[in-house]
Structures are given as C-alpha cells and as structure tokens.
Length: 298
Image 1: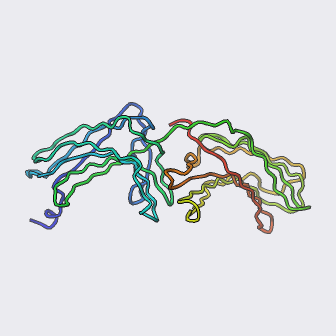
Image 2 (image 1 turned 135 degrees about the vertical axis):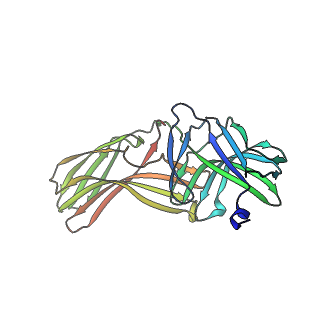
Image 3 (image 1 turned 180 degrees about the vertical axis):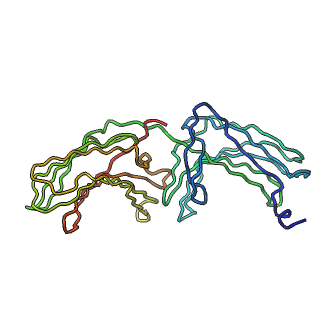
C-alpha cells in the first residue's frame, strides 16, 4: 500500500444546506483568505440540510458515534485565547457502530439563536458553521466544517437629526458643513452641503471619506484598526467666499457592514464621515463625525 493510501481519510463527509426559492449566496473569506460563496440565513431562520458520509470503497469503518454541531464563533485573530463560541448546538446522527456503505442523514436546527451578523475583519471575525464529526476512538476523528452567513435586518432609531459642524483656522478659514442625518442604511445616500464662510488660504481639493474603525478588546487593552473604505472628491480647485458646495455620496457601491457595538464583549465596528481639505502646500485639514449604519433588507 502506498503512503498516500495509509494517510488517506477512511471516510468522506459532504454536507448540503436545504435550498429554498430565492436563497441568496454571499462571499466570505475562507481559512486561507480566499473568497467563497456560502448560503445566507436570517436571524430567526431554521438551519437544515443533509449529511453524506462515504467510507472508502470496500472498507468498513468502526466508529463511536457520528454527530453534527451548529457553531457560532468569534475569532480574535491576534489572540486566540479571546476567541469564543457564542452558539453551540449538537445533534447525534448515529450512535456507535460500523459504517460499510454510503449513508445520508437529515439535520434540522430549529429556533437557533443567531444574535450577531457574520463579519470578517482585520482583527476579528464572527462566523457560523456546521461541523460533522465521525468519532473513531483513540483520539482519532474525521471532521468536516461548512460555513453559512447570517444577516440581520436592523431599524432606524429616532435619533435621525442632521449633523452640523464647523472647521476653522483663526482669520484664515471658516467652513460650515452639514449632513442630512446621522444614521444611514447600507444602500442609502449621504446628502449634505459645505459653506465657505471665510477663505483666505488656497485650497485645491476637498474630499469626503468613509472610514471604518474596528476596535478589538476594551479599555487599555483595546486595539483599533482604521481603514479608509472610500474617497469621494467633493471639490477640485479653490472655492470662493460664501460658495456652497453640495454633497451627494451613494453608499451602495461601498463594502459596508452595519455598525456593531461590543459584540459578545469582544469587538466593535464603527464608521465615520471624514471631510478632508488639502491646500496648495499639501497641508491637510479635516473634521470627522461618527455615523451609524444599519441593514434595511437582505
């Protein structure tokens, strides 16, 4: 027998999720950082499907039980000790026995609490998956994991007032700018305007940025990763006094998630509108304001 034959798994495990009309698939990152398509579930939806366990042709596999688990897992990438399972459900597919031919099992996890959205960030990930285990004894197990994604419909709160701020340099620059609101759904449009009340420096560019901040941990141990997701050029060239420049930035073309606040006491994700002014000497002036994002549909 070849070495490959000795090392080959004695069983092959395949899992499939039950299809429903209109089921969406979304891209997530696998363990190697590659994008792969997985089925999308809602917060309250049952998770069901089939498991196929196939022994090697002509082989009989002794096992001490076959089980399936549904796992919700938060992974902190730079500190595995902070990773945790926030959902863990298990079903026995078959008790101790001998597997001599292909066998298919149905599974159905009902009323599964899925409190968080799937998320794949720089320092933290929140993921859901099905894990099938064939326990062969003596610390030998055959394990197969298949991921699925969860999106949660949110709701806009009553705190929808517009944002008004000022940027100023004494006797040189005075700008007032306004955004139409402080909360946006992921397909929304940011509307606003910039009013140049006083302008005595030579500006050449004004841009509006979307910045994502991922905060892992809390207190003094918190680590923040900032990422500029999008830059929208509002102005190219110098403005004049009392000139008003409109802002219209569509969010649907940007890779955004909802705002996440202290997910399982492990991480948060926040978003900011950052208005940047650049003068002819490449000096930069900016003003930043947090916004809240929410998902209005799957």
